[in-house]
Length: 273
Image 1 (cartoon, one colour):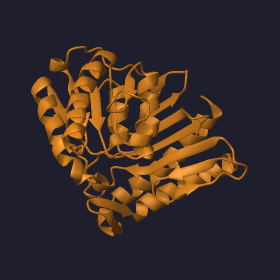
Image 2: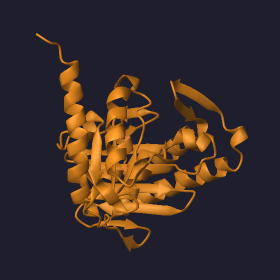
Image 3: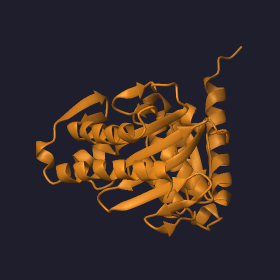
């Protein structure tokens, strides 16, 4: 295992231990609201602190971009940035709904080069190093072989932070529901992306995401032989917060539907004249 990936795994497992301990007595967990339907707990903060401490001890010069504490500049302007979500699926966690994960990725030279998504409730560790494949625990991951959208199981997430996009999303949801075997919405994007890499979902789409929701999962999918793009099929998903991904044939069909609705919506909203 690459030494940087090894450090990230150590950090993810420390965070997972904090999350698992807290999950045994959820009534004691303090919760505060960051915004509408957007929660943070002391567990998010404690898990993030443990991750940052582990990464900074090993790589003091690296920069950090983390969900709860934002961005820290690197000491020497190093070209390495760790992108961290200490607990993706906080709302699930608060309710004792066991679908949440720790997500850690390393960006170097504009590319994600290392990825860890750790599900502490199932002890499932998804890892990838650019160019070396993706793994679940010690098993090599491949995206699913399905090529017909009719047979595909597609993951998604509701754009709860961007309610102005809800109509566009509902149109996509309707179209995709009509054309697929089913849609699942478990509530932790980092884990949904890991499931695409593992072939448990054939594809996934969502918008209103942050880089730390997508960074690790996107590399897992690419290294498992899948495809990732934004709603126009470009590589700018970390910037736009819009992502479509899946097994190659499913990705192409899913992207076409998402893009069609997205462009129609953009056209309808454009000022006439």
